[in-house]
Amino acid sequence: MLSTIYYLLALLLIKSSTNAQLNTLPKPVVKADQKLFGPFIEGATFFNGSILAVDPFDPTSKTELKNGIGAVDVKDGITRLFLRGAPQAQLNGLRIVDGGTKLLAADPAKHVLFVHPITNDGVATQPSSVISIPSSVGVPNDVTDTVGGGVYVSGGKFQPVGAAKDGEVWFVPLAERAQPVKLLTLGRTNGIALSKDKKTLFVTENVAQRNKIQSFQVQTDGSLKDQKLVVDFDPATNKGFTADSDLDGLRVHPVSGNLFVAHTGNGKSVVEVNPADGNIVRTIGVSMNNPTNLDFSPAGDKLFVVGRCGNAPFGQGNGCLDVASL
Ligand SMILES: *[C@@H]1O[C@H](CO)[C@@H](O)[C@H](O)[C@H]1NC(C)=O
Image 1: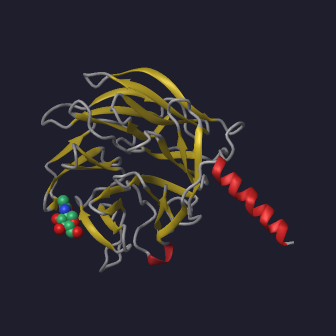
Image 2: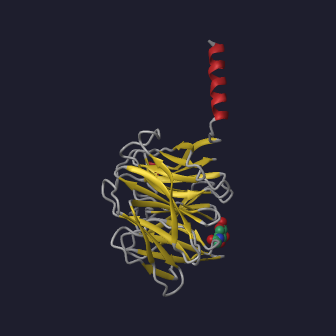
Image 3: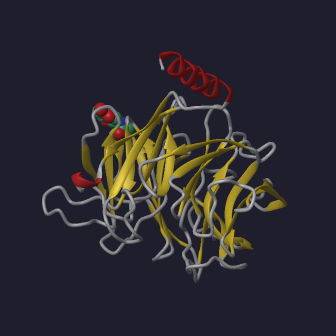
């Protein structure tokens, strides 16, 4: 009996040394019963020891603030209302850009990108600019870091089954009076991120329940060329991807440069992909069926994942945050 247990333990150890494993499993830090965030939690972004995420509950009135940003202290999990945006705003993707001097908040319903300056005192509540993007679909859903004075944004029609031409990619200059430019029409786009050297743009695409990550080469004028398929999550060959799978937030690891993508739609995981060969490095199980976005600690040793808690259906339940040591 004991020798069987030792044998199984040895097998487990061998398995964990040959497969890339996490140092510790993701731990829920914000849980459903705490009712700190609503079901549209999104935009996980690390800032000054906290994770910022949208759709917090007002701590006093307990109403859901779709125009709000909450901050979860990563050390003690204490959560506070961080910023209350324009009254009608419905925020989604968040990014800290330009070397930590601006917080960008995307509103796909109103087609605007809010730019909040960051000083030593923190993030300004009043945006320094509100950039309109003349799209007729859900743009901007998510947003990259800056390159060439602007950012790339994704978004599209969110119908139950993604179709060709549902999605768009725009370049949005942050300079006053410069106009956003629509660069691409793809399938449903969602996660969007720049490589560490900012020469490559990665975008998720969903067409007919099939998920892919595409890459493009960034040109000095902000235009994109050389579309390349990085990975095709074909349900027939990629374990864990089913017809209801979808991709959401996408980030590039600050050290390895690998892609981490939220596998939502009952995906229950974050998938790490090597962009050089499209291989899945590891699949990180999380406590929620529908993770929506993620970010890293600055050193890249921690992974933060937000999404609807447990198996809550779209638009229902609460928002949760898991933390894992990579
Ligand atoms: C970071 O947090 C500290 C308190 O922990 C605060 O004093 C400081 O102003 C914050 N910095 C910014 C840029 O928000």
